[in-house]
Image (cartoon, rainbow, N blue to C red; front, side):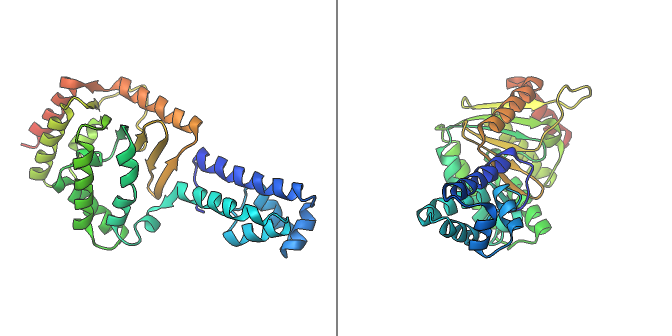
Length: 282
């Protein structure tokens, strides 16, 4: 699995390694004895049970068989796959196109009741217009060289947006003012996007906050992240998509969201900043 700075991924790796180590101990085997039964060197055993190396499914089968714990194989393989799913490189997620990547998170969005988003690069998908979405996804497709299914991916996002804005979900949106002025599309499309943001931001189930441009801010900008209730955080990194489920790390993002929200203006003041960006388009 690709390395990741997330403590959620690190802790999940360590938990899996501890389970392998406990199986060896329960079987009464030393590391050398297990290595001999598995047919590999002691250094591999050491790396696997210290989480320095992620076990393959074949490694898990061999380890469990050596320990006489074949009944543990399905559960440990499922745990290993769960660790793998916590961090996904964009090239893996988008290998068959952008539409599949959009569809892969549909169920998560649907079951979430409170979605909090911080955006420092582009506007969140649930408030994007079709033209803005097309420009964003076209840029991604061009930069990453993925299959060109941009039109289909745009439609998937629009369908999801219709469901999200039905009133059954609540949103807390925090946007850096820079995002309002960083046109990822032409002026006409950007104007339509900003008008749409003002309209959505005035809905009763949406809290829109804009962090004004300026100096001396107490908290630095962060990477774009999405908080799905209190159960999961998704972080969009340059290299991939990170799922965070560790409670302590979710708490870190909750704290960061509150700090950033304290710097933002809301309500009519937020919409005034959106209007200012709109007027600047001429």
